[in-house]
Image 1 (spheres, one colour):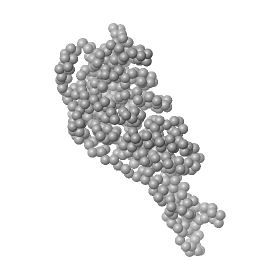
Image 2 (image 1 turned 60 degrees about the horizontal axis):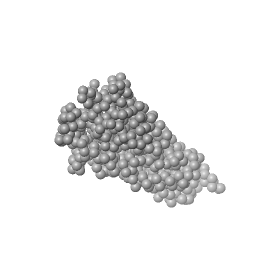
Image 3 (image 1 turned 45 degrees about the vertical axis):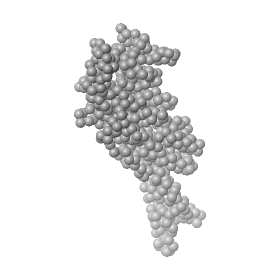
Image 4 (image 1 turned 90 degrees about the vertical axis):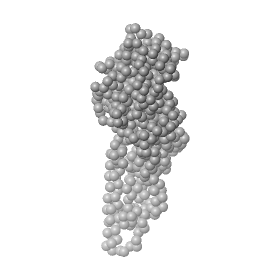
Length: 527
């Protein structure tokens, strides 16, 4: 059994988080400047020491101090003495630095196909009609076996579906040119926010987030999010995609003595702000089900009201820092926070929330039977690593020593939807004339090109002069013929080719399946 984690104390009162209950999720809430970041740092250190990998977003740049040992200062020494706490053993935690833009850490990428239409639609702020068109474009790409890896792939696929709307109308539904245009404009705005750097390959391998060092300590994955926060929708959708990837990737684990992975959502209100109900329902479902994968999810936000009730009800471990009751909404938040924490006969929770000092918190965690413990007013223990930022040189040293150094730095652009559609456009003139009647056979619904009449199995090649007699009859049987009124009579080879194309297309459609939040299932193995 893993040892309990001391997270806070006051006098003789000590509060321990049981690792076996850490995957019942939790939240850290409180106003700006009350100590939420240091609390997150303490929890990340403790999980790492237990051999549990951690992922967290560094919104202000302060959390890079985890990579460096702490040091005693007069102010900290005075505080520890007054609170009766021991000076921690100063040490750094093992960490890997990540950055969507590749500037402060290893690049983080995802493919458009793996992101899926649901999350991408939220990222583009699409309405229901536009989201339906986007889902249709993904379906056409999936059925065609065309990979959407980066932004230019999605742009090309959108243009292709828009230009051939009549061809797809009966099978997939109407395509509005206005909706295609709105999606294209949304992609332009997303590119300006850095989406073109996020989408592509090599895609992040979830296993690279779940590493331990030589001493058995879990690696703390720190995502540089100070620049990413300038695009809050991209930030929230990226974290949600990452959580869904964990859910789809990890096998069932049941109840374990400690989590397999712990995930921190900082600035969690961005995750739920303006999210459609369908997405909120799926977020709730992921949070509820991922516990069985031995993953703990912790939301960090200023106000408990930022988290929907359906999600807040799943969070068993609560750390509440001070709230300010200056407005009616603040007063409502204080009352809501007080009412949702387990009462303590000797503590007025509602009054205490507005009186807490920096680093002081109301804490209620789950006991060994999964029951909330009475709320205690305590002080968070100090971290063993540095409180504050690491220098640029220190970050560079951590990045160079990482086990994934050099793996993600160089982008890869392999053949995908853009290249295939470009090849079709370039090859189109060669198919003029007789071959034009069968050009649709090489469309998205039928990835294998179909031989035309008289082509001897080579599309777009002109007929040889007729030799007459038996050879003409054999050619018509094998390659088909054109009647006096222009009607097509397919030959044996053409029929076999069409059948094979349909078989390939249906096989691709059977293999491409999407998970709870639209991510591809088993996609990496197929590629």
